[in-house]
Amino acid sequence: MVMPIKVAVIGAGAAGLATARELKRQGHELVVYEKSHEVGGIWAYDDRVESDPLGIDPKRQIIHSSLYASVRSTIPKEIMGFSDYPINVRDKNGVIENFPYHEEILQFLKNFAKEFGLLELIQFSTEVVRVEQTTENGPWVVEARHQRNPMTIVNSKKLYDAVVVCNGHFTQPKLAELPVLKWPGKQIHSHNYRVPEPFRDQIVIVIGDGPSAQEISSEISKVAKEVHLVSRKSGVVLKKMEGFDNLWQHPKIVYCSKNEEVSFQDLTIHADAIIYCTGYKYSVPFLNTNGYIAVEDNRVGPLYKHVFPPQLAPSLSFVGIPSQGEIDHYLQ
Image 1 (tube, helix red, strand yellow):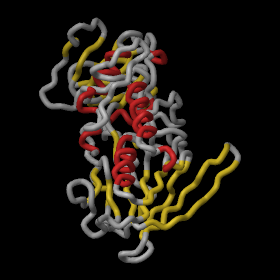
Image 2: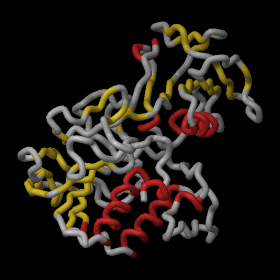
Image 3: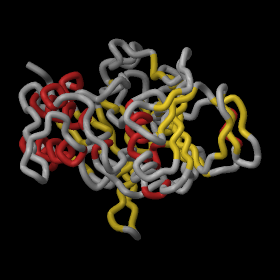
């Protein structure tokens, strides 16, 4: 028989919801803290963008979602859903997509939260600002700020036997060390990309090798004058991308001038904008473990099986740390 304990879950995205369901099944007393006004985490689309398009300014208002309007899953619905709760949400045309769009995935997560009675466990519009163990092997204090309305913030401090961190890792932009960072033209990280229209008739450089770089460069090519996709992989040569008249792939950038020229290893162009699709970094600014846990070289550790810190287990754990896709089967 499992002895019930008090648990704080930080985040109500896919990881937080999966965690909350299992803890509830075991009979534990839990509270889920969610900064947003709804469940879904990264799958809750927000058309707002940050004041700093590169995401460097620590004083900026952070927008959690990194979705652009056209995003859909690159993973089939059969493995995106939970093992006992598959994705069967229909799109606006009444079709169950094999690769669902973000709207369908968000609705799936909302349905999941409602089906298993998780909504009443969630404190929405509540930002966790401090998590710290009071004494060795003692309870954890969780301090939070609840935005009751636009004019009222309520602070709280509660003690828990355990804390599960599920705050995601697709919010804090990671920027490569490239010569373009001091380039005077328009620069944004893909975190702040939503739709292609602002790049109409422009010459745009997209930096990155992952799915977002491929998708954004393809989408922008429909409205831009030219799109130049820059790969950081070795062995890449200049070539026009198959099926496009205005999209080229290049090896790395070697030089940027003050007159907005950008030089690749094979060509120099005058560009209007650069979009960084260079990924994200882990961030747990609220967590103080007295050095037992560190975020270094874009990894959180040490963690046993990416979940438990050896010195603090089982009272502290992380769910959703591996960065290669957020598959709900794996989160279970």
